Image 1 (cartoon, rainbow, N blue to C red):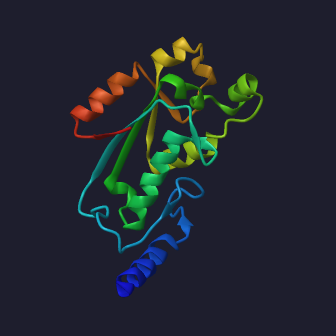
Image 2: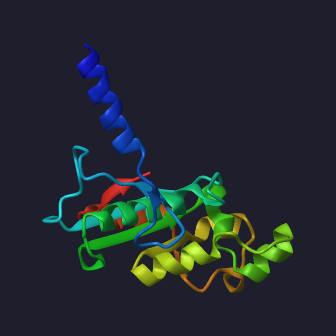
Length: 173
């Protein structure tokens, strides 16, 4: 029994003693990686993922959905899965819609720069396609000129989700 407890303590300290890292999307989507954990990303797969971002919640100072995408990319990067094998698309809609505002537009609306601008830039540099639902921008009275240059307007979030899922992308929410 003592041996089992000692082994569990050693194992958990090894797993949980790891530092938080952001190997691909620098500063965002931190992960604790250990190669001794089961169910690792498979470097023989092509990852095709579509995200539905609707929450206005924050995690680590940015939108929770954007943080989740950065987290996934960092996780894949720990297994040397390169961006050529990762295709990520996201639709931003509902309560999350205002995260697409440019710094100037965000400043006018909320009195500060958009905290998501840097991560949006890093994600698009990686190759992530970020769409905003034009139905949501119309409802929230956001003009096209107020949208971050890295965000693509789509007819609707539903059209993004349907088109990409029908083309083999796995849905993440």
